[in-house]
Length: 434
Image (cartoon, rainbow, N blue to C red; front, top):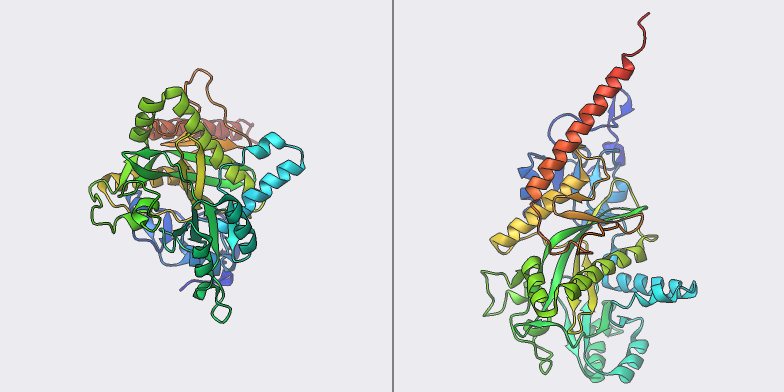
C-alpha cells in the first residue's frame, strides 16, 4: 500500500534522512515495458514502498491522487511535474500557447508573437462551439475533432460539413439530458502534409525537462516518423488509416507492416529530406522543429509548478507540410514506452538509459554537461549556442556513439572528483597539529 506523508517521513536517530541509503538505486514503477527493462539493466532494485525508493516512475493516477500526500526526501525523484497537463492536455496546451501569443502582442513584441504560428486554429468544445461555428462558416474545409482526455488516436474523427458537427453535437456527448459533455478540441485539418511514398506521417521526438525554473531542456537526437498504411486521400475523411498516424490505429489495418512497425527512424528520414530539399533547407527545418519545442515550453514555464524532485520526459508529435512548415500536433506526458519492433525497443531503451544518466541518481555528473549520450542540452536559462564552425544548428537526426561518449564523460567526471577530493584532504590536513 502507498503511504502518506506521515508514514513516508522516515527518521534515523530522530532526524529525517537527507541522503539515500547505501546499496543499489531503488525504484518503483507500475509499468512493464522498456522503462522496467532499462531500470533493471542498470542494476537498480525494484521496491513496492514509495518511502523506500529513490525513483518513482508512476502513472497519471498516482500523480493526481497521491503525489501531494507523499513526502519526498531531498534525493528522491518523480517522473512528472504536478500540473504537467498544462502542456500535455490538448485544450490546456492550446490555451497556454494562445495566452503566450497574446501576452507578447500586448508587450509590443510583434515579431516574437508571430513565431507562435505553429499550431492550427483550434477551438475547445463545447465551451467555444459558437466561435467554432463562426470560423467554420468563414473558412470551411476539413476539421479534425479530438477528445482532450484520450490518447492513441481514440475518439478522433474528421468533418467537412457543419451539419456533421451539428449532428455530433446532438449525440450523447452534447445531450442536455445526458451526462456532461466530453471536452473536445476542433482544429483546422492540415490538408497539405508532406508525403513520402504518397503516405502521411508525423514525427515523434523525445524531450527531457529537468527544471522549469530555470528552464532546462534536453532533446534526444533520434526519434521516428509514424506512417499511415493507406495512401493520402482527402476524398474519404472517414478512413482513419489515411488520416490518423497513431500506431494503435495503424496496427489494426490488414496491410500493416509488422516488420517496420510503420516507422522510419529520424536519421534515414533526414537523409531522405536532404536528398530532396538540400542540406541547408533541411537544417533550417530541423532547427525550426527545435525552436518550436522550446517556445511551447516557454509558454508554460510560469504555469508549471517547479519542483526539484521532478523531471518530465515528453513525447512531442510534430508534422511537416509540403511547404516544410512545422506544426505542433500534441505533447505527450506519457509517451508510449512499449516497443513494436526490435529496433524500436533498442531506441527506446537507449533513450531511457541516457535520460536516467542525466537524472544522475548515482551522482556521476556535475550538471553542466552539454551532451549526455544522445541527449543534447538545447536550453538552459537561454538558448544553448552552437559552435560557429558546425554546419548544423540542431543535432536532431545526427549520429553519435553514445556508449563511447558516456564512457569518456564518466571517466572525465571521475577524475575531476578524485582531484577535488585530494585538494580537500590536503586543505584539511594542511594545518599544524597541536
